[in-house]
Amino acid sequence: MRKYIHLIFLITFISYAQEPAIQEEDRVMISEAFRISGLYGNELWDGWDMAPFALILVYDDYEFLINHPSPSDDFKLIGFDSILNSQVYYRNRQFSTQFLATFPAVGGVQTIVVGTSENTGKSSAEWILTILHEHFHQFQYSQPDYYSSINALDLSGGDETGMWMLNYPFPYENQNVNAVYDSCKKILACIFVNNKEPDMNLYLSYLKNRDQLKNILSEEDYKYISFQLWQEGIARYTEIKLLQMMLVDGYEFSDEVKKLRDYKSLKDHYEDYYTNEINLLNGLSLRDSKRNCFYEFGAFEGLLVDLVNPGWRKEYLTRKFFIENYYTD
Image (cartoon, rainbow, N blue to C red; front, top):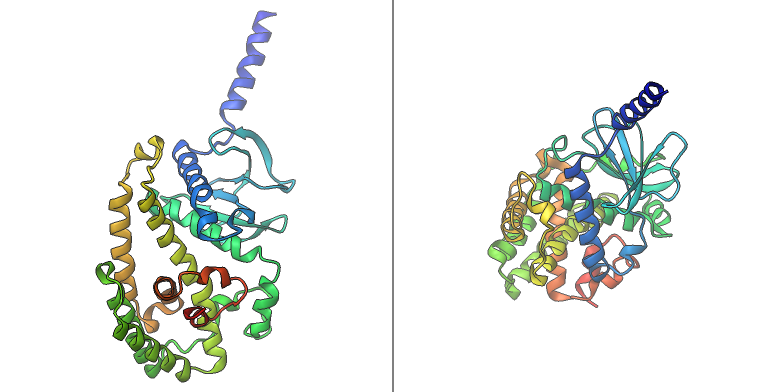
């Protein structure tokens, strides 16, 4: 009898031990993103905490669902994770291990789908920030009028999949468009290099060049770049602002984060991150990098609006898609 009991216990133990699990360092990083979000998100964006924070973490063989209100039947419950403060589910992998995206992946809920920091080529601090970037997209997409406002732009060309947002035929190769865009980005970079505050001459010069960019583009092309700056640029802006708020507040990463293999202090990470963002703003060209340029351009334009109209974020969701509207009250 004892042999049978021992055998049953051994089989149960082996089965439990082989159940897929989220790696400890990933649990630590996701938990840190949740913590930062809870401390600073609402201060930056009113209503931030009303957006879903569902997340799928994609491994090579499995993917794990966290913080989701209604998992689909193909997910199996692992149990409650005290670090993540969430029930955790898993299923066989369906999504790319290199995903960094947000879409209604499960049950119509806007869900962050993300590969590991190794598979996405990001440091632990970058990966934490990326989760917060994607949560900002959840905040955008969860607004009741988001999709109707997007449709009103009338840029899809009949595409109902949303891929037009990535594949819109913007005149990236046009020489005149590149010249005016380059003038805009150089002035914008000059304003913020070494964290300087802008003088009025630079600011006015930027607005003049920005008007030239608007005038050289067709109405549809200008709507597209404005949409990208509003959506992706301000998501990148949100990364920068969260880091700045954390620095001012004297935020300390958790002890568990400090034990990660590539840990940097918040100050060191911010300095490296900000320098890299300035370099990307300066270095990326429309012709070569296409819509990827709009992340940094929109981010620093958001920072510029901060300087001339600090209350602009209150209008972000009600006066959509045209950042120039935020320069004045």
